[in-house]
Image (cartoon, rainbow, N blue to C red; front, side):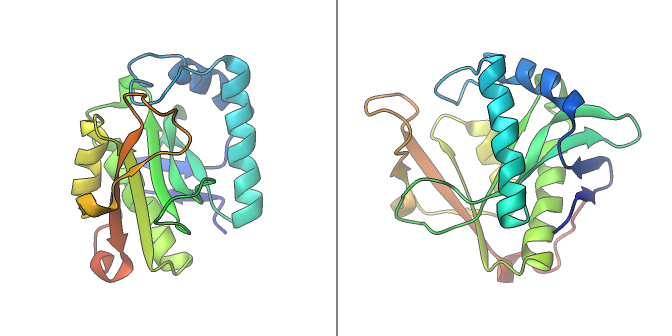
Length: 187
């Protein structure tokens, strides 16, 4: 288990109490949450941090808090998680990220995700990592492409935690096998 990971510009670490306020602000930002069914209240955001930390205890990995190295500035999360819903591709380990608007456009999501993938394929010995997002989330799909993930439309699914008829229900599934990751730059 890794308490933290470093990339060229970022520190991926366990959550600290000071992260909760900027995380709640992110989760209440309509642009950050555009591809999620709803904004989160402060209580819901804090509960999410608690759940993330519990998953570290359960699995030995999770969504790390991400800060810009040398500044201590919290910018969001990136990491690995075991989804808690049923879908045709399960069981699986997913990679995911959510960054504050101020952190967009700097390559941080891709850099942090590369660090997390290196941990997943190296330290954890995973054979495959998946990622998924709504059909409308073109920014996350671009990160998935930069990571070398592949998309097969036959794998797309209706997310069971998004209500039927909701514009975000349909999700695209992306995959990356360890054999295809070997030798990729991690930072």
